[in-house]
Structure formats: C-alpha cells, structure tokens
Length: 303
Ligand code: SF4
Image 1: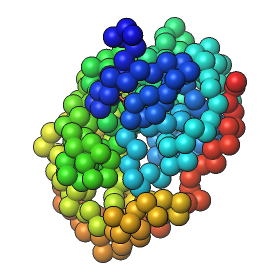
Image 2: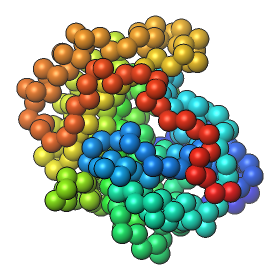
Image 3: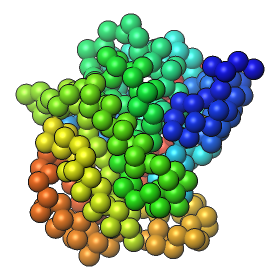
C-alpha cells in the first residue's frame, strides 16, 4: 500500500485507502467522481444566478456529513453516476455553451485532485465557483490556485462543541478559518462586473440553525475579528428546513426539528445590522422549504 493512496484531503485526515473502485474514509467515497446532477441552477445568490443561472455540478458524498444535512440525498447516499476527468470537462463545456454565468462545483472537497486535473488547461470564459462546506485543508486548496475564481465556503460553526455535536468535527472553526484565509489569499477582494455578477473573490455562507443563535452571533463576530470582512461577501441563510427523512435521526437534537423562529431571526438581524459587515445578502425567513432543494436524478451527467 503506497502512502500517496491514503487520503488526507480534508482536515479529518482519515488516512483511508480510496481507490477508483473502493470507497473509504469518513466521506465513504471512492477516488472516482460521482455526480448527481449537472444543470442550470437558480438557487444561488443573485450575483451568481444573474439572468441565466449557474451551471451547478452536484458531487455525491461529503466529508462533513452534518446531522441536519439539507442535501442528505447526495451527501450520504451512493446516488449519482461515475464521471471521469474528461467526462467532467465535457460537462463543464456543455454548461458553458448553454450560457450560464459560472460553473458552480457543489461539495467538491473530497474530489479535489481530480477536479484540479479537469480544470487544468481549460480556457473558460466564465468563472469557476468552489461551493464547499468550509471544512477543508488550506494546504490541499493550494492545488486550486489559478483554477478557481470564486470561493463560496460555508462558515457553519464558530462553536467547537456544536461542530463536534452536529458534524463530528470539533476542529471545524479553526479549519474553516484557515481554509477561508487561503481562499482569500488566492482571489483577493471580491470583484463584481458592471451587471452585478461576481467575477472573483470569496463569498461566505452561514445557515442559521434553530436553537443555536449564539453560534451565528459568534460567526458574525469572527468575520469581523478574524477575516478581511470589507473585502469578502457574506450571505446569511435562513432557509433551514427539518428534512422529513432525517427527523428520526434528530432525536438527540429536538431543536433541529423546527424552523428558525421569527424571534431568532430578528435577533440575528439586529446583531448583523449593528456589526460593520455590509457587503452581501440576507435571506428572508420565508425562504425555508424542501421545494428549494434540487432533484438529484442524474440530469445532465455524462457517463
Ligand atoms: S476526503 Fe474523505 S477520506 Fe479523505 S480525509 Fe477527508 S473524510 Fe477522510
């Protein structure tokens, strides 16, 4: 067994053997890309969707596996089709031909080297978006320098205990901060074009969780204290929806079996409005609902 075959792609550093035909590690993924959907998508922020949408490529599997995952169908199951490096290039070129504003790589972390290989040498006219959980290795992200124009990481937790309880990742806060700093080092301050479309930069997302408002307030503090917040976009999401299929496994987290309340939402809004953070987006509380989740039926995947 050669050392380089043992996966240390993300902060879990499992050291698992992952081969093209052998899944391994916490992410339970083989070293062959699996994609559940590749299609025009209007579910991202306005600066990415514009009028023609993002070309979203949803990878199967995830290295974080939050207990409340809003995309559990693809993060935990083996759905999706295997796609080779040339196959991914073909998908990307087709989406570009369809006129999308960007290529949106969703949950790509556990396939980073294969995606880097696919993007190398492509001469796209549109930006490529790295749309991730934020639980990533800064060292591994360096492989993407020059290949990714827009990083869109989550910053889910500033509270290590919460990260341990909900995502089995007590080191999430420090890992995410370190990853976001590396992303910013690569892109620099965000740049919008004359049509309000994001051309490059970092856009950080945070999903408000019911019953865990203090965590959200600490994330806002951390943006201000630990990151160049004036040069980064921040998107606050209020769409949390308890997924019907996950409710039995949420019995230890009863607070996650409801939506964010009006009172919780207002408390976060007041805190954010009082902070110096100005650049970005705030989602309406009414955005919650399972209907916003895409259908992962293999649309647009080249085998
Ligand atoms: S990408 Fe998967 S196998 Fe590799 S270190 Fe992370 S969780 Fe483990």
